[in-house]
Image 1 (cartoon, rainbow, N blue to C red):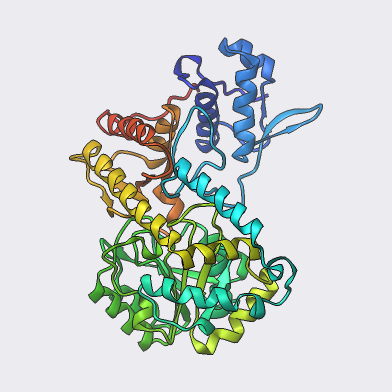
Image 2 (image 1 turned 45 degrees about the horizontal axis):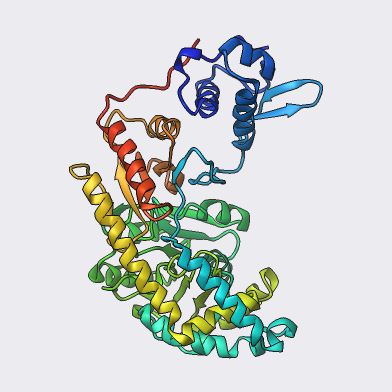
Length: 461
């Protein structure tokens, strides 16, 4: 049995989370080692003067985080460090927590009603091919044609032959990486970038090279320097404010990035799940260099989360390669959802929902600007989040833990670090993931913490 014990005086509400944070901090600080056995639920409850159920919830939370494991008949033990990274968001919504950690669009009962009505209409006029076809090229011909005007609203001019339907942006970026970067090759990307890119590249045998950024995103000179050894085969980039730091790359910067890509013969994977939400759109890289850009977009961030379908636009030279990789990973996009998305695109309803989302996001950003007044942060009026750098002397992990103990979940900037040493002491705060009243309350907690003297999480040694 370990000699370390939690400090009852340091527990705060919700108590189970406070207890879980104390144990996690003790593991991180080395006060609890791998293999140490923790007290039983009853022992710890008696020691701290709390209920057994509270201890059980704390242990369940620690098991969910991969920090401890229970062994029947033996007890509960500290586990070895996880080999897989944690997502920046909490995996499931907890009733007591205001979740500003997950990136999603503003949702309203109208979204649920629209989906219900769409499915009713789909059921009443369902083409047999949607449920019986096994041939993607035949089934999706109409869907690809409907994608062309939608993509034009995203700033991309293309033909139906260059469009692949996917099950959302994640599937699109996976297929694009497979087509543009063979195993063993190197892909350049922003030093603070897409949180799934690191594990995905690892699974695919691809190396990542983080490139320095500024308030506009990727720095052309830094990209050029990263490519000089000739090993970089592709660039993965998010020039729209969907990227973690909420930067919005200017038109001149985009042109500079394209010139560097042309100089080093890089394929470009452009991830743009916001699609047509930005009213004042800047030319996508796919519009500046269509011959080398694989453009990824989807409906989940701009229309509604449950509409999990999207488009991957590819150059002529990669059409066959992308089709093959799509077949072996997904075979094809889910026909029912693709059919619903196409109907909404054709009827104009999807764009109506984009305009609704644009207005809702602007209201959320006005609210965030009011509450965060005087606190440096970056956001875009039609983006889904703000990026809030933490000042010197404010350890990121401690701040995130303190916020969670006060009932607010935010994403730590370090979850998005690609390059070792990238300055990531910051928070990514979703402004769209919950109600306006919860957003106001959650931002208020963050402001209060920022205005308080930073203190470490207390440990009893």
